[in-house]
Image 1 (cartoon, rainbow, N blue to C red):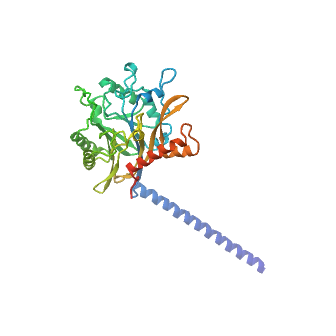
Image 2: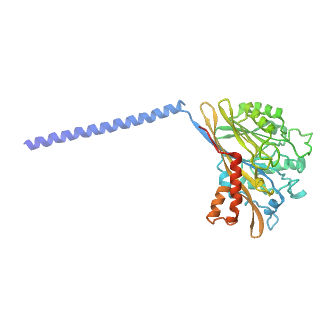
Image 3: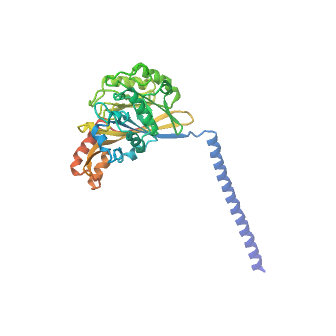
Length: 393
């Protein structure tokens, strides 16, 4: 009898314990559910800032000299330049949006394909840019009119036909007035591009909207007009003295004036060598200028003239307040490398440090230990010019 009573009491206690356990689990689940509900409600009320980060990449001058053109000639008479950017494609594509400066016309074969001093390249270059990962081709430079106004307009048509944006030269007044504004993940980026001139070739008087001349007052007016419409305003300036390692005092003064007027980033081209960069504090905001990104690909002579970079810029936007901040500016030194492939002279852009590592591991088919000194010199000179990357504190 006693054993039976004990068993009954034990079963009752176990049942109570089980009930308490189930109640506790249900209570915990309810609390978790309530916390999840709180998170949704807080997010829906936008009390937690939403930060959107984007990356932009940029490269300097593409100079299509005669040897580069010939390197792409195929047996059937067509052209293919796939070898140009295969080694830096990943770097270019780190950007949500990427730009390059193109110093040549795409005027068609009728007047012949030529390099310096009057450039005209095969249309295949446009496809090469697109397949490498570039999105924007800057067309305002001193070679914009190398094949006249007609050739310049055809250049825009070919580039846009390949799915590329252009800036700095325009087909009509409406296109010039509209500005280039890209919405990248909710961050609006505006690009403006200007050049100091066209090597003495006269601008078409009947088409004054065609070319953005580097005029201080015009740039300030354009900045004032575009600034309210974008989160980030980028100037691409074709300026400075060729082959000089430092910017002129005039460039420095202009850069600071434009940044103070509302530009956020200035990308310089034309000197054909890498020049210095700096962070400029405007109020409580960090802004950036690089005076020259150097040659990305060319067949000019000399180490400095075949040195360039892939520039990477990270920006973040607080989607609640609308404030956009420069988070990072970093760069990868590059080298425009001439090499022979099955007896044919070709050119490619290589990332310097990765290229050196491939050589050391015996993995580069076109370079050997003998090439290490020049790559080391490119690396050191580029770092010496640009200094340390920038990371916001």
